[in-house]
Image 1 (cartoon, helix red, strand yellow):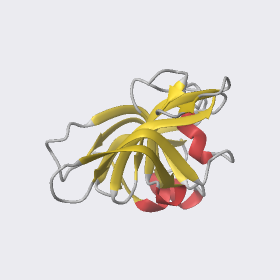
Image 2 (cartoon, rainbow, N blue to C red):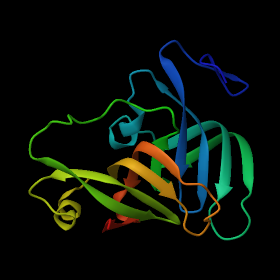
Image 3 (cartoon, helix red, strand yellow):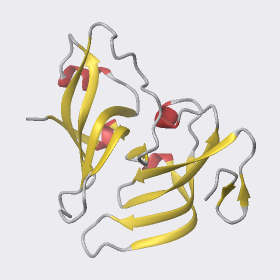
Amino acid sequence: MTDSEVGKNNTLEADEKATPVMVYTPNHLVWGEVVTKEVIRLSTWLRTQAAPQYICLHESQMMYVGGGPVVSVSMTEMHIPISQVLAFHMLPPHQDPLDYEPNEPNRKMIPVTALVGSFRFDGLLRMSTQSSLHNFLEVIKEVYTSLYEVKISQPERPSMAPLQVPYTIVRRDAALFSLMK
């Protein structure tokens, strides 16, 4: 796929970009290219007012995440309701610049595990130095929580190699959080 083409029948406008992403739903893992305006910061897109009602993935692949054999299904265009999105990230090597100032005072990164559906996300959670994981989760109201330097695995399928991504978002009310040991 080139920068000027998405799928077989779609062409990008001059102010658009196509970026490969991965979307986690309760029953599926879907990856493909999403088309957005150039100015959209894709890593935080779903946390903004610009978030769509459906994510449209072009030239997508879908895998069922329940038990049974791993089967991948190709789709020309897949529309995923935002209400079904448990986690979302850009596929490496694509990434946005950091969405925070690394030297910001009074902030810390803590290692956490977020269990989202059948997936395990081991990464870092950014919060106030005065906060704990419990207090952070009680106070935040955003639908999606950011995780950094994340290793994603599926414990039910140890044969699947873990995926390392610099940034992902997980649906806060669909994740079980734990401090990492």
